[in-house]
Picture 1 (cartoon, rainbow, N blue to C red):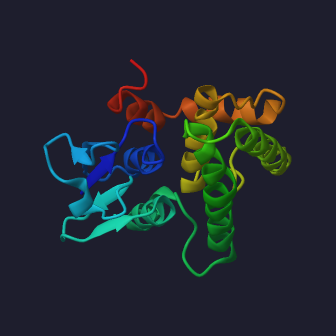
Picture 2 (picture 1 turned 135 degrees about the horizontal axis):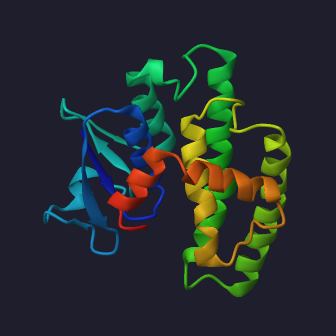
Picture 3 (picture 1 turned 45 degrees about the vertical axis):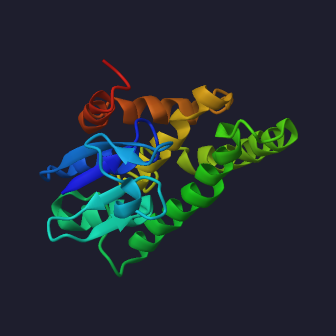
Length: 202
């Protein structure tokens, strides 16, 4: 398998999950401005949408969209408990979280990274994110992870989105439970490995 990624982008989530899984994989960095990979390939031929992540499977298929990619990885190693079994209510709860993170948190950050976005729009998005973070913090009270006692692929995704705050002036310190959660996830060996591989820490 090969993961196409951009450092610190949402592709960091499947990168973490791959390290958690123990599966063999390689990575190739993508320049999202030029749409070229570090090996000189046209990334649009790999993912016509032009964004990461893209996971090229050994059989030649390519998966895109982070929530789909991380669930596929998790299902290859059920003993790791990175996702509850398909067909269970717990799996639907995982999908509930993945959809919430993707639509309410991830996408709300997009204007904050866009230099052309008006400041009024950015202010509105920061206010929306504050309300969403309050919801997440409330649901995390008394829990180590989003689904309870087990780390899941949703935790990898939330960790990545929370990490963007320092780049776009989004402060999570009003919610100590989120600060503690982010620090706890950061200490996982798989998270450290992915961060190092992407050059985000030494």
